[in-house]
Image (cartoon, rainbow, N blue to C red; front, side, top):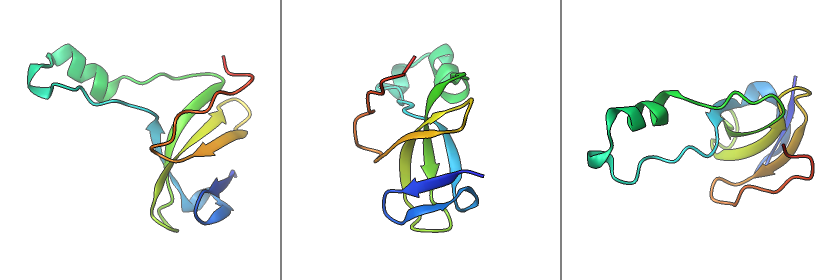
Length: 95
């Protein structure tokens, strides 16, 4: 089980959280002008990285807030925790 350091509540067990998938996913700027292929890419296609991935997490049984995590998907080691509007951190061993 992961020990996730919520930016507002501190370290908590993984079962208090819900992973919201890859971060950041950017909605098309012009929805009405976006073709079906671009919408499909936005809605359904995600990177499935082996190594450092960036994810959204929701503290559903705590403060109820969302934040981002940089996590090694092989070792599950959490490398950084940062707010939803904060810039993505640069990590030394990022591939």
